Amino acid sequence: QVQLVESGGGLVQAGDSLTLSCAASGRTISGFTMAWFRQAPGKEREFVASINWSAGRTYYVESVKGRFTISGDLAKNTVHLQMNSLKPEDTALYYCAARLGVNYDFWGQGTQVTVSS
Image 1: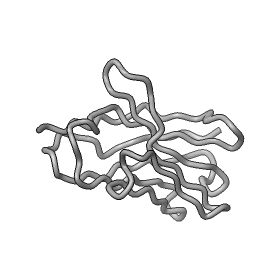
Image 2: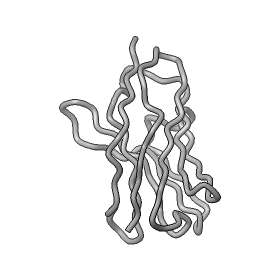
Image 3: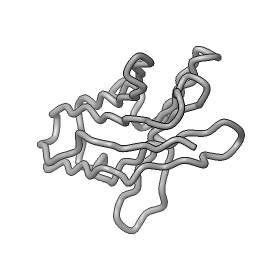
């Protein structure tokens, strides 16, 4: 089991930056694929970015490439999502998730990001 707690959300203006953090406990995250998802009102939850240390790979949804960066601090068992050049369409509840296999089995409670125009 791994417990995930997100932080860092808030209300910002378009063009601003925010960094989300996901603190994990229970197990070290180095063995997991860690990811960020988001869900806007009235929309389905969508994948945003993921990181896997053993493979040394990161993945991003097309709409955030070049603006968002996922990274991890293994010493602190924490994953971050640096979000630059935020747009109103980035407004959503952002979730941290972890998986060992195919499915993301562990989820945080989410942190709200609101971008005003």
